[in-house]
Length: 328
Ligand code: ATP
Ligand code: LTN
Image (cartoon, rainbow, N blue to C red; front, side):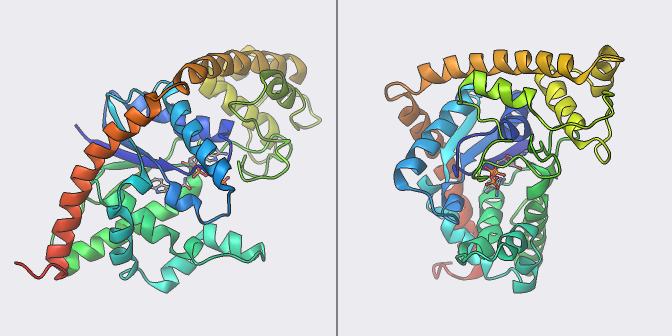
Protein backbone atom coordinates (compact mmCIF):
# COMPACT_ATOMS: atom_id res chain seq x y z
CA UNK A 1 0.00 0.00 0.00
CA UNK A 2 1.40 3.42 -0.97
CA UNK A 3 1.82 6.01 1.76
CA UNK A 4 0.28 9.46 1.84
CA UNK A 5 0.83 12.30 4.29
CA UNK A 6 -0.45 15.81 4.75
CA UNK A 7 -0.86 18.52 7.34
CA UNK A 8 -3.12 21.47 7.95
CA UNK A 9 -2.47 24.48 10.19
CA UNK A 10 -4.91 25.40 12.95
CA UNK A 11 -4.52 29.10 12.19
CA UNK A 12 -8.17 29.97 11.93
CA UNK A 13 -11.64 28.72 11.44
CA UNK A 14 -11.82 25.98 8.80
CA UNK A 15 -12.98 27.31 5.45
CA UNK A 16 -14.74 25.84 2.47
CA UNK A 17 -11.35 26.16 0.70
CA UNK A 18 -9.70 23.89 3.28
CA UNK A 19 -12.62 21.49 3.14
CA UNK A 20 -12.63 21.21 -0.65
CA UNK A 21 -8.88 21.48 -1.15
CA UNK A 22 -7.70 19.33 1.72
CA UNK A 23 -10.23 17.60 3.95
CA UNK A 24 -12.57 16.10 1.35
CA UNK A 25 -9.77 14.68 -0.82
CA UNK A 26 -8.17 13.02 2.23
CA UNK A 27 -11.42 11.26 3.01
CA UNK A 28 -11.56 9.93 -0.53
CA UNK A 29 -7.98 8.59 -0.31
CA UNK A 30 -8.24 6.78 3.02
CA UNK A 31 -9.18 3.36 1.66
CA UNK A 32 -6.47 3.34 -0.97
CA UNK A 33 -3.47 4.61 0.99
CA UNK A 34 -1.68 4.21 4.27
CA UNK A 35 -2.47 7.73 5.46
CA UNK A 36 -0.88 10.13 7.94
CA UNK A 37 -2.72 13.34 8.65
CA UNK A 38 -1.54 15.80 11.24
CA UNK A 39 -2.40 19.20 12.63
CA UNK A 40 0.58 21.44 11.85
CA UNK A 41 0.39 23.40 15.09
CA UNK A 42 4.13 24.16 15.11
CA UNK A 43 3.67 25.84 11.74
CA UNK A 44 0.73 27.81 13.08
CA UNK A 45 3.12 29.61 15.45
CA UNK A 46 4.41 31.60 12.46
CA UNK A 47 1.44 33.88 13.05
CA UNK A 48 0.23 35.11 16.42
CA UNK A 49 -2.94 33.41 17.58
CA UNK A 50 -4.57 33.84 20.96
CA UNK A 51 -3.81 30.67 22.94
CA UNK A 52 -7.51 30.10 23.64
CA UNK A 53 -8.30 30.38 19.98
CA UNK A 54 -5.45 28.07 18.97
CA UNK A 55 -6.79 25.39 21.32
CA UNK A 56 -10.28 25.74 19.87
CA UNK A 57 -9.06 25.76 16.25
CA UNK A 58 -7.02 22.62 16.88
CA UNK A 59 -9.87 20.67 18.43
CA UNK A 60 -12.28 21.85 15.76
CA UNK A 61 -9.94 20.78 12.98
CA UNK A 62 -9.59 17.25 14.26
CA UNK A 63 -13.30 17.02 14.90
CA UNK A 64 -14.02 18.30 11.40
CA UNK A 65 -11.73 15.78 9.78
CA UNK A 66 -13.64 13.03 11.53
CA UNK A 67 -17.01 14.67 10.88
CA UNK A 68 -16.11 14.86 7.19
CA UNK A 69 -15.61 11.09 7.18
CA UNK A 70 -11.98 10.45 8.10
CA UNK A 71 -11.82 7.23 10.09
CA UNK A 72 -9.19 7.33 12.88
CA UNK A 73 -8.94 3.55 12.69
CA UNK A 74 -7.82 3.74 9.07
CA UNK A 75 -5.80 6.95 9.19
CA UNK A 76 -3.06 7.98 11.63
CA UNK A 77 -4.33 11.32 12.89
CA UNK A 78 -2.01 13.26 15.19
CA UNK A 79 -0.71 16.58 16.47
CA UNK A 80 2.64 17.71 15.08
CA UNK A 81 3.69 19.00 18.52
CA UNK A 82 3.13 15.55 20.07
CA UNK A 83 6.03 14.19 18.02
CA UNK A 84 9.12 16.04 19.23
CA UNK A 85 11.21 14.44 16.50
CA UNK A 86 9.74 16.81 13.89
CA UNK A 87 11.50 19.85 15.31
CA UNK A 88 14.77 17.99 15.68
CA UNK A 89 14.78 16.63 12.13
CA UNK A 90 13.67 20.10 10.97
CA UNK A 91 16.86 21.52 12.45
CA UNK A 92 19.09 19.03 10.65
CA UNK A 93 17.35 19.57 7.34
CA UNK A 94 17.34 23.34 7.84
CA UNK A 95 21.11 23.19 8.03
CA UNK A 96 21.14 21.63 4.56
CA UNK A 97 18.70 23.97 2.82
CA UNK A 98 20.13 27.02 1.07
CA UNK A 99 19.16 30.51 2.27
CA UNK A 100 18.55 31.37 -1.38
CA UNK A 101 16.12 28.48 -1.77
CA UNK A 102 14.15 29.55 1.29
CA UNK A 103 14.11 33.16 0.10
CA UNK A 104 12.59 32.06 -3.23
CA UNK A 105 9.48 30.61 -1.58
CA UNK A 106 6.34 32.46 -2.64
CA UNK A 107 4.66 32.17 0.76
CA UNK A 108 7.65 33.86 2.42
CA UNK A 109 7.94 36.51 -0.29
CA UNK A 110 4.23 37.33 -0.02
CA UNK A 111 4.42 37.77 3.75
CA UNK A 112 7.55 39.87 3.38
CA UNK A 113 5.91 42.07 0.75
CA UNK A 114 3.07 42.83 3.15
CA UNK A 115 5.62 44.78 5.13
CA UNK A 116 4.44 43.48 8.49
CA UNK A 117 7.06 42.52 11.00
CA UNK A 118 7.53 38.80 10.56
CA UNK A 119 9.38 36.23 12.63
CA UNK A 120 12.11 33.92 11.36
CA UNK A 121 9.68 30.99 11.52
CA UNK A 122 8.06 31.95 8.26
CA UNK A 123 11.47 31.84 6.55
CA UNK A 124 12.43 28.48 8.06
CA UNK A 125 8.94 27.08 7.56
CA UNK A 126 9.87 24.77 4.65
CA UNK A 127 12.68 23.10 6.65
CA UNK A 128 10.19 21.98 9.28
CA UNK A 129 7.72 21.02 6.60
CA UNK A 130 10.41 18.90 4.93
CA UNK A 131 10.93 17.12 8.25
CA UNK A 132 7.18 16.54 8.64
CA UNK A 133 7.14 14.88 5.27
CA UNK A 134 10.43 12.99 5.07
CA UNK A 135 10.02 11.53 8.55
CA UNK A 136 7.29 9.16 7.32
CA UNK A 137 8.53 8.31 3.79
CA UNK A 138 5.27 9.09 2.04
CA UNK A 139 4.95 8.48 -1.70
CA UNK A 140 2.42 11.29 -2.07
CA UNK A 141 1.73 14.59 -0.33
CA UNK A 142 -1.65 16.04 -1.26
CA UNK A 143 -1.58 19.83 -0.93
CA UNK A 144 -3.20 22.90 -2.44
CA UNK A 145 -1.39 24.69 -5.27
CA UNK A 146 0.15 27.17 -2.83
CA UNK A 147 2.04 24.44 -1.00
CA UNK A 148 3.47 22.60 -3.99
CA UNK A 149 6.67 24.62 -3.93
CA UNK A 150 7.36 23.54 -0.34
CA UNK A 151 6.93 19.88 -1.21
CA UNK A 152 9.33 20.35 -4.11
CA UNK A 153 11.85 21.79 -1.69
CA UNK A 154 11.40 18.73 0.53
CA UNK A 155 12.20 16.56 -2.49
CA UNK A 156 15.37 18.52 -3.13
CA UNK A 157 16.50 18.18 0.49
CA UNK A 158 15.76 14.45 0.45
CA UNK A 159 17.80 14.00 -2.71
CA UNK A 160 20.66 16.03 -1.26
CA UNK A 161 20.62 14.02 1.97
CA UNK A 162 20.47 10.68 0.15
CA UNK A 163 23.39 11.72 -2.04
CA UNK A 164 25.52 13.09 0.77
CA UNK A 165 24.97 10.21 3.22
CA UNK A 166 23.13 7.25 1.71
CA UNK A 167 19.62 6.31 0.76
CA UNK A 168 17.48 7.40 3.73
CA UNK A 169 14.37 9.21 2.54
CA UNK A 170 11.69 8.37 0.00
CA UNK A 171 11.36 11.16 -2.58
CA UNK A 172 7.77 12.38 -2.14
CA UNK A 173 5.48 13.61 -4.87
CA UNK A 174 3.13 16.55 -4.40
CA UNK A 175 -0.43 15.77 -5.39
CA UNK A 176 -2.64 18.67 -6.39
CA UNK A 177 -6.22 18.26 -7.46
CA UNK A 178 -7.17 19.37 -10.98
CA UNK A 179 -10.45 20.71 -9.67
CA UNK A 180 -10.74 22.34 -6.25
CA UNK A 181 -7.03 22.91 -5.64
CA UNK A 182 -7.57 26.62 -5.32
CA UNK A 183 -11.00 27.82 -4.24
CA UNK A 184 -11.20 31.56 -4.62
CA UNK A 185 -12.63 34.30 -2.43
CA UNK A 186 -16.33 34.81 -3.21
CA UNK A 187 -16.02 38.60 -3.17
CA UNK A 188 -12.71 38.76 -5.02
CA UNK A 189 -12.32 35.66 -7.17
CA UNK A 190 -8.79 36.62 -8.18
CA UNK A 191 -7.59 35.85 -4.67
CA UNK A 192 -7.52 32.56 -2.72
CA UNK A 193 -10.25 31.93 -0.15
CA UNK A 194 -8.16 32.26 2.97
CA UNK A 195 -8.88 31.61 6.63
CA UNK A 196 -6.42 34.28 7.70
CA UNK A 197 -8.41 36.86 5.79
CA UNK A 198 -9.71 39.29 8.40
CA UNK A 199 -12.94 40.46 6.79
CA UNK A 200 -14.21 36.99 5.86
CA UNK A 201 -16.98 38.26 3.59
CA UNK A 202 -15.85 36.16 0.66
CA UNK A 203 -15.01 33.20 2.83
CA UNK A 204 -17.32 30.40 3.96
CA UNK A 205 -16.56 28.80 7.32
CA UNK A 206 -17.60 25.20 7.79
CA UNK A 207 -18.93 25.73 11.31
CA UNK A 208 -20.66 29.04 10.60
CA UNK A 209 -24.36 29.63 10.62
CA UNK A 210 -25.66 27.85 7.50
CA UNK A 211 -28.00 30.69 6.51
CA UNK A 212 -25.01 33.06 6.49
CA UNK A 213 -23.02 30.70 4.27
CA UNK A 214 -25.90 30.37 1.83
CA UNK A 215 -26.14 34.15 1.66
CA UNK A 216 -22.45 34.36 0.84
CA UNK A 217 -23.02 32.07 -2.16
CA UNK A 218 -26.01 34.16 -3.28
CA UNK A 219 -23.97 37.36 -3.15
CA UNK A 220 -20.80 35.91 -4.70
CA UNK A 221 -19.27 38.22 -7.31
CA UNK A 222 -19.79 36.98 -10.87
CA UNK A 223 -19.84 38.97 -14.13
CA UNK A 224 -22.35 40.75 -16.29
CA UNK A 225 -22.68 38.45 -19.30
CA UNK A 226 -24.99 36.01 -17.52
CA UNK A 227 -23.67 32.84 -19.17
CA UNK A 228 -22.73 29.86 -17.02
CA UNK A 229 -19.44 28.71 -18.48
CA UNK A 230 -16.04 27.66 -17.16
CA UNK A 231 -13.31 30.16 -17.94
CA UNK A 232 -11.00 30.89 -15.02
CA UNK A 233 -9.36 33.90 -16.70
CA UNK A 234 -12.35 35.77 -18.05
CA UNK A 235 -15.06 34.49 -15.74
CA UNK A 236 -13.27 33.77 -12.44
CA UNK A 237 -16.35 34.19 -10.24
CA UNK A 238 -18.70 31.77 -11.97
CA UNK A 239 -15.83 29.34 -12.64
CA UNK A 240 -15.08 29.24 -8.93
CA UNK A 241 -18.72 28.48 -8.13
CA UNK A 242 -18.72 25.77 -10.78
CA UNK A 243 -15.69 24.15 -9.13
CA UNK A 244 -17.37 24.24 -5.73
CA UNK A 245 -20.54 22.73 -7.23
CA UNK A 246 -18.52 20.04 -8.99
CA UNK A 247 -16.66 18.93 -5.87
CA UNK A 248 -19.71 18.97 -3.62
CA UNK A 249 -21.77 16.88 -6.01
CA UNK A 250 -18.98 14.76 -7.46
CA UNK A 251 -20.09 15.70 -10.97
CA UNK A 252 -17.96 17.04 -13.82
CA UNK A 253 -18.01 20.75 -14.57
CA UNK A 254 -19.12 20.02 -18.13
CA UNK A 255 -22.09 18.07 -16.86
CA UNK A 256 -23.13 20.98 -14.64
CA UNK A 257 -22.63 23.55 -17.40
CA UNK A 258 -24.90 21.44 -19.65
CA UNK A 259 -27.59 21.33 -16.99
CA UNK A 260 -27.64 25.12 -16.66
CA UNK A 261 -27.57 26.02 -20.37
CA UNK A 262 -29.63 29.17 -20.85
CA UNK A 263 -30.36 29.49 -17.13
CA UNK A 264 -29.45 32.64 -15.15
CA UNK A 265 -26.92 32.96 -12.34
CA UNK A 266 -29.65 33.34 -9.69
CA UNK A 267 -31.08 29.85 -10.21
CA UNK A 268 -27.62 28.30 -10.33
CA UNK A 269 -26.53 30.04 -7.14
CA UNK A 270 -29.72 29.06 -5.35
CA UNK A 271 -29.17 25.39 -6.20
CA UNK A 272 -25.54 25.60 -5.10
CA UNK A 273 -26.52 27.29 -1.84
CA UNK A 274 -28.97 24.43 -1.18
CA UNK A 275 -26.34 21.76 -1.93
CA UNK A 276 -23.80 23.49 0.30
CA UNK A 277 -26.38 23.91 3.07
CA UNK A 278 -27.12 20.18 3.10
CA UNK A 279 -23.44 19.23 3.20
CA UNK A 280 -22.74 21.69 6.02
CA UNK A 281 -25.74 20.48 8.02
CA UNK A 282 -24.47 16.89 7.93
CA UNK A 283 -20.95 17.90 8.96
CA UNK A 284 -22.12 20.19 11.75
CA UNK A 285 -24.38 17.51 13.23
CA UNK A 286 -21.54 14.99 13.31
CA UNK A 287 -19.17 17.62 14.68
CA UNK A 288 -21.47 18.25 17.66
CA UNK A 289 -21.31 14.55 18.56
CA UNK A 290 -17.53 14.26 18.14
CA UNK A 291 -16.57 17.34 20.12
CA UNK A 292 -18.21 15.99 23.30
CA UNK A 293 -16.31 14.07 25.98
CA UNK A 294 -12.81 12.66 25.65
CA UNK A 295 -13.14 11.00 22.26
CA UNK A 296 -10.72 13.39 20.53
CA UNK A 297 -8.08 12.91 23.21
CA UNK A 298 -8.26 9.18 22.65
CA UNK A 299 -7.94 9.59 18.90
CA UNK A 300 -4.87 11.81 19.27
CA UNK A 301 -3.22 9.48 21.74
CA UNK A 302 -3.72 6.55 19.40
CA UNK A 303 -2.34 8.57 16.44
CA UNK A 304 0.67 9.88 18.35
CA UNK A 305 1.61 6.37 19.48
CA UNK A 306 1.79 5.15 15.90
CA UNK A 307 3.51 8.29 14.54
CA UNK A 308 6.07 8.48 17.38
CA UNK A 309 7.17 4.94 16.79
CA UNK A 310 7.98 5.71 13.15
CA UNK A 311 9.53 9.09 13.93
CA UNK A 312 11.85 7.72 16.62
CA UNK A 313 13.23 5.10 14.30
CA UNK A 314 13.70 7.56 11.45
CA UNK A 315 15.43 10.17 13.58
CA UNK A 316 17.72 7.54 15.10
CA UNK A 317 18.65 6.43 11.59
CA UNK A 318 19.36 10.01 10.51
CA UNK A 319 21.44 10.72 13.60
CA UNK A 320 23.49 7.58 13.01
CA UNK A 321 24.15 8.54 9.42
CA UNK A 322 25.14 12.14 10.05
CA UNK A 323 27.43 11.28 12.96
CA UNK A 324 25.44 12.88 15.76
CA UNK A 325 25.14 9.51 17.48
CA UNK A 326 28.59 8.62 18.74
CA UNK A 327 27.82 4.95 19.30
CA UNK A 328 28.25 3.13 15.99
P1 ATP B 1 -3.98 30.72 5.10
O1 ATP B 1 -5.15 31.13 4.31
O2 ATP B 1 -3.84 31.36 6.41
O3 ATP B 1 -2.70 30.64 4.33
P2 ATP B 1 -4.64 28.11 4.58
O4 ATP B 1 -6.03 27.73 4.86
O5 ATP B 1 -4.22 28.33 3.18
O6 ATP B 1 -4.30 29.30 5.52
P3 ATP B 1 -3.64 25.69 5.67
O7 ATP B 1 -4.51 25.58 6.81
O8 ATP B 1 -2.27 25.26 5.94
O9 ATP B 1 -3.55 27.13 5.13
O10 ATP B 1 -4.23 24.91 4.47
C1 ATP B 1 -4.55 23.59 4.60
C2 ATP B 1 -4.78 22.95 3.28
O11 ATP B 1 -5.89 23.56 2.66
C3 ATP B 1 -3.60 23.10 2.33
O12 ATP B 1 -3.41 21.90 1.61
C4 ATP B 1 -4.03 24.22 1.46
O13 ATP B 1 -3.38 24.23 0.23
C5 ATP B 1 -5.53 23.96 1.36
N1 ATP B 1 -6.24 25.18 1.05
C6 ATP B 1 -6.23 26.31 1.78
N2 ATP B 1 -6.99 27.25 1.18
C7 ATP B 1 -7.46 26.68 0.05
C8 ATP B 1 -8.29 27.13 -1.02
N3 ATP B 1 -8.77 28.35 -1.03
N4 ATP B 1 -8.60 26.27 -2.00
C9 ATP B 1 -8.14 25.01 -1.99
N5 ATP B 1 -7.35 24.52 -1.03
C10 ATP B 1 -7.00 25.34 -0.03
N1 LTN C 1 2.36 24.23 5.07
C1 LTN C 1 1.14 23.48 4.96
C2 LTN C 1 0.86 22.71 6.22
C3 LTN C 1 1.87 21.66 6.40
C4 LTN C 1 2.04 20.50 5.58
C5 LTN C 1 3.15 19.81 6.13
C6 LTN C 1 1.36 19.99 4.47
C7 LTN C 1 2.85 21.63 7.34
N2 LTN C 1 3.60 20.52 7.19
C8 LTN C 1 3.61 18.63 5.56
C9 LTN C 1 1.83 18.81 3.92
C10 LTN C 1 2.94 18.14 4.45
C11 LTN C 1 0.03 24.44 4.67
O1 LTN C 1 0.14 25.60 4.90
N3 LTN C 1 -1.03 23.93 4.18
